[in-house]
Length: 181
Length: 247
Image (cartoon, rainbow over all chains, first blue to last red; front, side, top):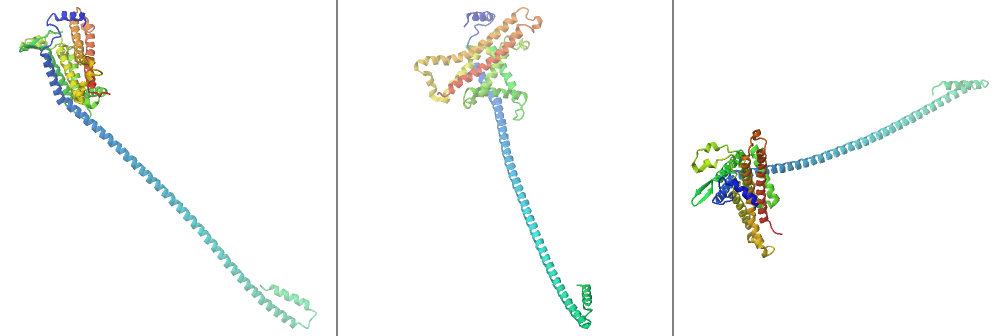
């Protein structure tokens, strides 16, 4: 130790007690006092305090774990919804496609039917026309026959008048032409 | 700087001043700590509880940095008490002795002499106190060393060679001595200097606000805080050294 320090301490201490470094029963008294303080504070302060801090730590840990789990659950639900949404969308898509296909098919069918119908109508119309024509031809034939008979009648009636034959035929033809066909 | 008042106990003596000041320190610590744990809650802590929790975390971090935390956890209560006791002891020597008039005429246990003087005394300005605490530290070191390593704890005394035994013995003896004398020296010197400054003529010019006393008191607060921290950290370090597994 620094001799200067020692002499300094002595001059100060000279007013009262002796050497500042002196051991006696205080040493044991201090140890006991301090141990009592440690025991007391441990029992009434540090232990409850640390228990409480531990409890808080536990509480926060639980909360964090809980939050984590909720987050996971939410994520799972989100994925489920997404999946469902996608399914619904594809379903809707397929429904629309189906409907389109069916409608197209129906339109085609309707058009084909219409075509067939017109075809049928045309055929029947043609058949009607043919029939009418046949009837008309038959009529014409009958009339021609009648006319022929009539002509023959006239010719026979005026057989003697040969000079007027040509004008007579013209007249007949004129008559025939006025008849409706 | 205090006159040491001796109490006669049987054939021996005890330092009455030191003991009375120790009990005052203990009372102050108990009151402060009990105020802190009065309304313990795991929710939002109050101011005092917050301070105590900060202290717990501080010590806990020190322990965790120096050793296996599981081995150090049972020490927390001791270390908390240690740092608080040394800190408040160091601060006690800086507090003006405003209770002196109360004990002016009390002859019992020489209380009038104990509370004589301008400031109170730090219990840590007595070598008995610091040596007592250092002894507890070294007992703790040896006890925990044996507890965690069994008889093989003693093997480190002869490592790397039996020739090193004297060095290891000096080592284990010097640890408590350096602990004790470091703390005692710092605080005792601080009190001596306060006593010297108080003897200076013209100290109370400017009301004593500007001058050596406030500066030295401020510095003493700093020293007292540092020394309480150092004592605690060294205790942790010594224990850590004793319980650490060799590689």
